[in-house]
Image (cartoon, rainbow, N blue to C red):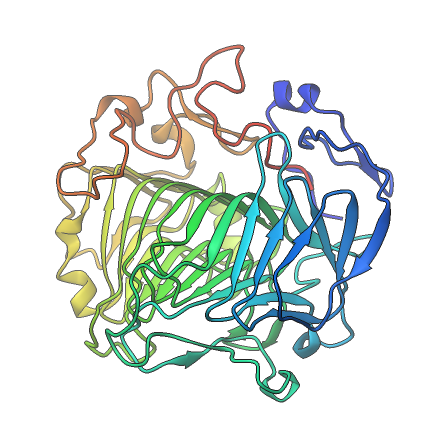
Length: 451
């Protein structure tokens, strides 16, 4: 069972703790449904007609379930779906929503929707995760989603994504809605660079609603965006094995309010970053160029330089292979290097990284020949929180203290998307309020920090 990451005390008291195998799971969400389930239903290999899943039933993924034939799958708030751990990763359970189909999973703060492992003692990578596929533009020809053993795909099921050619497709495509959703213990891997993630979006368009989504203890990336134009808000990546946020193949969406935090008691991949962004696998200048627009993100590694060295952590953010970016009003801390710009094209856009707080145990930026804009607070220290001054970032409180530069150095939203909210703070959260664990804390009620 995973090492406990402590939750905010008031939230742990406010929710009734549940126990599994004698381990206190604390920080459990409140729910209007107390159970027991009236039935347990195994979802089929394919869903080809509209279907509604009610929260009074436990649903089980036993292998891959493909939503296809333009069908719509709707989950009631509070619904739980558990995925069976298969004997081989290439047969891993997963929910895959193909082009033209939609998934509507709209939970609430009191009744989140949960996708998790069916194991009595769940572990990282027990199942695949959720895959959304669409026909929004990529910077390449249509692609086949990673992490799926193609010979096992049912006849007639399309696991490709994209709009028919580089730059083609529907920018407003909708794969549905995920809101107040938790995805736990996902990320089964077939082989190196052929993995499923907690939430995979392939060619997903801006008509899709993604907000308040937690991906916890995944075996690969927490959130991966292969092209597309989907926007996202209030994302939480807890202890992903690889990257928290991964962008590729011409992704052009924007993200506001996102958190990633690692667990120093875990082991991680050979290439773990907070953000990893590529234009494509070769670094070619294909268009549209990958450019995530990000504001109010907090990326947290570990507390000390010795922990980071023992875990092999790399970068708070890494932009490479000709990827562009716009990152503002954010915090990166607890990695050996705060920001890595690993290709000439990415280095040329260094001015797009501004109004952030950037900490590194060894360096703020690599290569050191680049001078970041002076609007960035830049810190090198052996303890990640010495200068950033969040309330208790390694025990579940990510809000800045009154003395934090996140509150004093200012923000800038000029030229950012019009739907971004303008805030006076850097990072994902507003100021710490003594005695009130829910104030300025969008994690409250629907997430879990204790596993």
